[in-house]
Length: 224
Image (cartoon, rainbow, N blue to C red):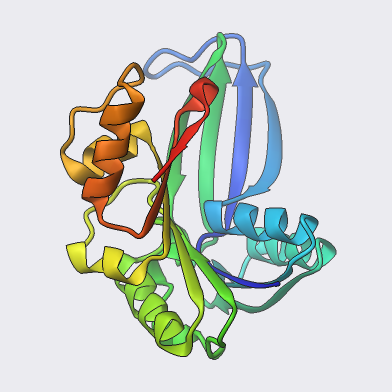
């Protein structure tokens, strides 16, 4: 199975402390971890570990984080030749502050926000699976999915994090994946963590993709 992931690469900077600092306060005694992330990169690594032949398409900065992330992909047997290093740009970063059993996340898209079709030299082939998320420009995803569909490839879109998208995008998606919050945002349906399976299924049909998978945390998932 050949999988092509078009999407984000981030370095997650995880800072753990006993509490969050007050405004203007400097708080010492925290610990920090640097973890490879980004929804796109995570998907690529997961698919490779499941035995697929995986190629990653995306953008990083010409910096230490970008070099590290490409190295991680190569170590996981993911073809990273389609990840472009952009001069003068920074690699995407997510700063995750963990304190008192909760977390707060601040993201900086960096080069991810500049990922464009002109950076993609790979041509979709029949039988491939093309995967994307919403951490790179929607217009780029739509154009790449249109080419993939025309070539006879299948497309999978994770609608996270939710951003405005044209309704026509769903016509280019074979499988849509989202959680109940994103499902409510995408369809306008009144969906909560306690909504019935019937209500969730109705919202999935409203989304308009041939197959929709709604993930519900501990409750499992609904496939329509």
